[in-house]
Image (cartoon, rainbow, N blue to C red):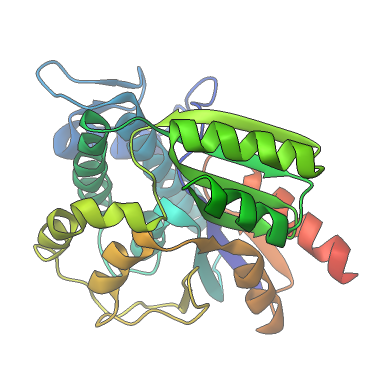
Length: 282
């Protein structure tokens, strides 16, 4: 049983770009509907897109491109799963929305979230090697939040930069073997996103979502999305953590034997191997 897993925002652009009709078609959609050049990784003249929004568009675009390539190779999933902003390409793969709508949504929502950086300075903190309980305590004591539960010992924190740095120092003192921080424009997957919740809901309300043609496993409660649930999920999921470990375990329990990561990088595949090794299913 094959799972297609759609990752969230990449940290950087891949080197080089494909040269085929599918890539050119996705690049044309990016230019027309986002004002973003998929080849130069820059906004078009007159388009005001932040670097983080460009990366978010890029991540969805590459997932859409790789979906096309998998279809051309005859690959078909029995189940789809998504991580963070991978939801937009996942919805397109499930035929709930079109490629154009997936790109428009990530561009518009990303641009709305980026405006949060005008009033506060946010950061992400990656913590590896610490268990959840001391990590959660470090987050609480420093006013930040656990945004991603990727594995039992791989987490992402989000919140104000000063709090992130203090929490990372505490995690290091508690025994984490790797901590690192990255600037961000918005604290995705935390309650702080309620600040732009109304704006995001207004954007989502402009779109129509069809019933997914394939089971689409969401990362919050590990249930399959329905057309009726999708609009609220797209807003609510940005205020809640990503539970990838639970999502991968749910996929395994449903009978998944193979995961194809449909997007930029191999982060989810690495998490899956870690999870499987702890469960003794490798």
